[in-house]
Image (cartoon, rainbow, N blue to C red; front, top):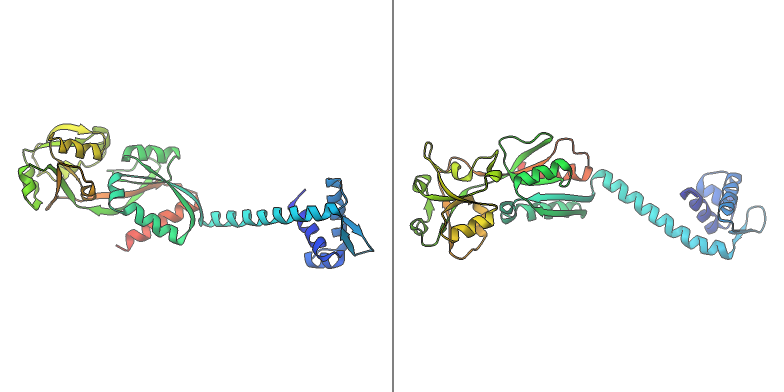
Length: 297
């Protein structure tokens, strides 16, 4: 049984006349009659009672079948609509990875909300991951789009663009001498003890600390943390100070204060990363939206 059999039957059931139904369907009456007979054979039931050559009435089975046929055709039309919208990128699901700093800046919430306003049938699955795990998930297909730190170069098969730039800030124990200052310069950080992110997280990236340290000055890293929140907690414990994207200063940890670093030689960049050969229309439409938003700023 095919959807056309249901369409043919519904037309006859609503018109109660083969000739009028055939005209409505733009096929010949004999062809329509043959198709209805084939449907009745498939079902093993009489759906129509022939009053004369063209006029018919519905049997009890026909009335029940008509109700079911309407529902199936309605679902079929809905499925067709969903398929067409998905093909245009107007519907579907996107798996997004993001850094904590991108979430704290409002980048994730604003871009997703803006896209959903234009495409309400699109859903997002969010995962908080560090940059390197995001790259791996993009390559294996677990993620579709990642908001990451800017790498020196993208892994094979991936590409991206800078979507946001933030200044750096220094996280200090509240009793640190620099905590009394409104702003901090790179020169003030010379000879300080630093807490850094793990080597794996910094691999292939500019180190935040190196970005704000004067050229030729050695960095004294006394400990490392697996993630930004742990790093801030270690600062609060007095292990050392650290350098972070400014958006992370929104995290309130007792005993920690943040001060903006001025005159740093570079900014903290967030990038949108995705597969070069991405073929999902909804994902490519989201990437195009993000690129357009970037170009406006």
